[in-house]
View 1: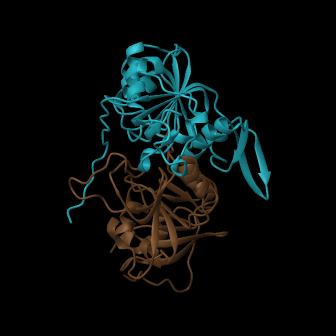
View 2: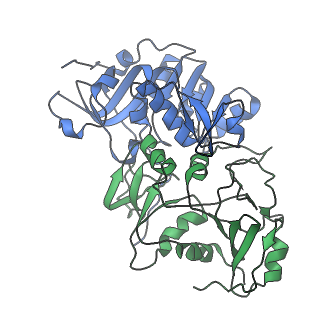
Length: 232
Length: 218
């Protein structure tokens, strides 16, 4: 067993500096690395390029980094629900690269698995394809998209073990598994960190080889963005 | 009389076939889940990573780790599965999802769709829409026939930024059901009490009108 555990979020984020490119898991506020985001706020690193499907809300998730003006470029598929984000985007303080959601996922997975680029039909004939190579396969047009290059990936899992093996819960899985091993350093925070041998190897979603550092997360809020219930 | 949003959803639900995996967009499409015909088996996919999506939870049963693509709390049904975003769009691009129902701002007579951006207004992003329209074999658009200003949303050419080209197969509006065929929009059904003339006047793109245009049946 190769032990990937670090004792705290402070140790987990060692080496993060201003100007870096970061991947952050989550869909909306579901499955976001809450502890890593708090530590990024505390560190005060700036000029960050963040790759994440969404940009949080005003007072939670990546919205916390936006409040401190720590993000220079945001790569996302959907950025509603965030007034400060809109203000910074419209004033030109923040560069935004909107990317189709499936393409964003695959650009992470390509980085994870050593594929430099791939062709996707998404975005052909739209402004997303501007300046990109187009190829035709079997009569259909495809856009070439390149793998991301990132310095750190921050992911959140439900359970993990000392070896860095991860298990996700429900739809909190989303982009988290795809970002593991997709950056130079992958940091996983988990709701429950267990000794090696505690998890059934058959049930592991991401093997520890894709995780460099793992730590026990603290004080998860797990905020719900759109609480919706039925009456009967 | 023109349909309301519930009726549009109800009419689209008639397109659901036994054994279909279906992706529903936000807005009117979400309502389609309320009208699945009796006796058929359907699984709903939400692109954030679930197949077998169930209704909203009861008060107190909400789970922060279980949401749909609109970020609403949901439940899962027996037979459900969870997966990552790459697998989710893999099953979409791989044409394993049988039917995609989504809203639109404009559709052209060639089946082009614009539904993600209005120049000069705030852009929130395309989310999964470009991936869905680029790949799905079977796309039904649920939308109003004209916009708030009274302009037709069925055009010869989209004026707004494109989401995908030549992908829409069928459109259900408050006035009509139309198919996109090589010659243009083909009128398939009228809403109860709506005349062919009314539909013609509300359609800016080329419209083909067969000899007989039945009323929708509910």
